[in-house]
Length: 84
Image (tube, rainbow, N blue to C red; front, side, top):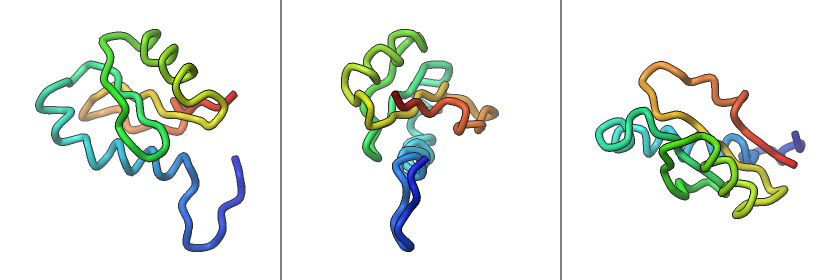
């Protein structure tokens, strides 16, 4: 992980915050699906984790991205953030 300049969020923190901001709508419309978040924005929702991961690597490359199953219970997001 990169070191952050005081007052600035890391890419991981931005992606987690974007997921949390979108979570109420995601729970209402896409619970159980996989959210792809990169560069601090919700990019798309997928039916499978494999599809979300493939799109994440294609779209965000080595910049890092978050793939998170939309759930009321699983908030262990650090284990789902990917960077090449």
